[in-house]
Image (cartoon, rainbow, N blue to C red; front, top):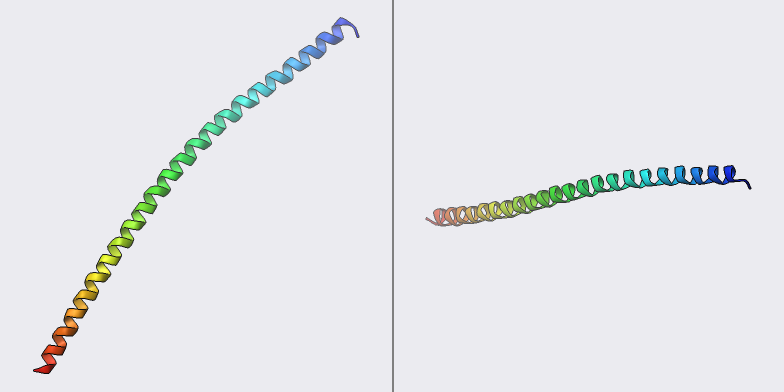
Length: 83
């Protein structure tokens, strides 16, 4: 193998290595973007879950108050019909 052939092979290896380095940088940047997006989506999901839990608590409280009012209404109608 002559020196020109060896130099061409080194150039080819250098070119491929440069391409791999560029690809690695691109993938790292994309990974960082996706990690940010995941964090944002997890935060959004957490807020929605919290909101849903609050809604369920409020619904249960309203249901409890309605049941209490209906019970009082039943008691009132029973005592009213006794007279």
